[in-house]
Image 1: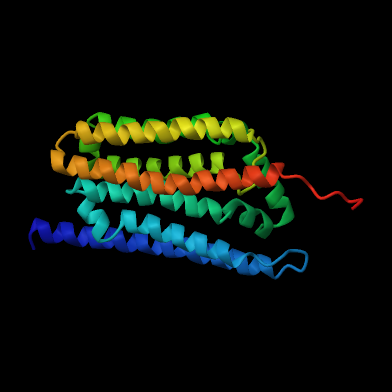
Image 2: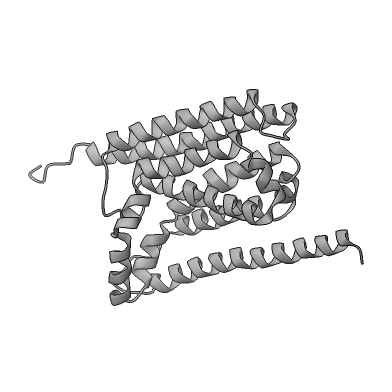
Length: 262
């Protein structure tokens, strides 16, 4: 038994474990939706939320396990496609699934109140602040692609895992801080969030052009160019959905209400 065979078996085993974790996330969400829908005082959990959750989990799983994840270790364009799935599309779909709302309506009342107090705590307020979330999200990407961190993450499995977790968590926090789907105790105005979103999108676009012209360490120029273009145009497509959601929520919040006297 040579080292390559052992290495291949370890990858298959880790992929299997991660796949089971993703399946567990789907089962827990669907189970919570079904259980809470049986409460007579609650409306059935919307079907489209299940679709968003399963879609988000599939996007994250595709970026972390399987052929794309394996290819991303040696091919920068594949890595960038995984980044779009893990750091942008998966967080957007999972936020639209409103997991915190589902959790609060499924938990017993006393536990839900305790969890609600946690959501209002200072650390949660700090990390869900639009500026903090934007810095973690976009700032982390600048750190990844303009330093040797990208090279290190491809050589060290622990660093690789930490970067993947950061990309996903930061993407989720940023999306949740811009479009309010779950309850947010400390809300910011639409103008405030719009300004943060515009600056973040500009920074993301500038970074993609920087990658195009200045390949990360050990990345061939051709791969950096295709990866930068994918980041630029793919990111714009996902950001467009985010912009439409924010504008739609803004429109709903400010449109004239029908007078009760009419």
